[in-house]
Image 1 (cartoon, helix red, strand yellow):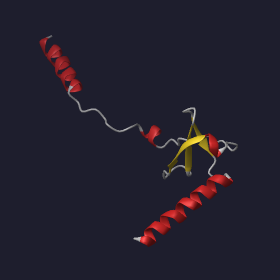
Image 2: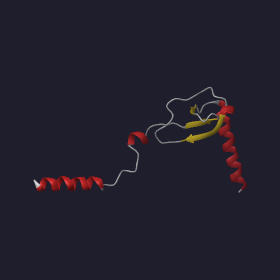
Image 3: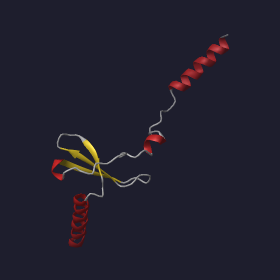
Image 4: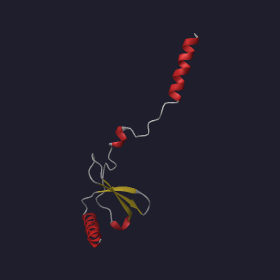
Length: 98
């Protein structure tokens, strides 16, 4: 009887001191943030844009609106394409100036 109790206590001690996993489960890591996108959002309602590029998902654009709501924006919207092109051109000019 004492041997069984000792085995149970030893097992519980091992479980209690086992290192915890620090990463997210694979199913959460590989999941795309944007499952659906908004096509008809005005750029005047947007406070900030965030861009996410992950290996398993298409290019994702998350817009934080002025009411603090976050929505995924279709990256094919014309004003967003122009915004990205202007940002790329600005980066190219700043690299040439250095």
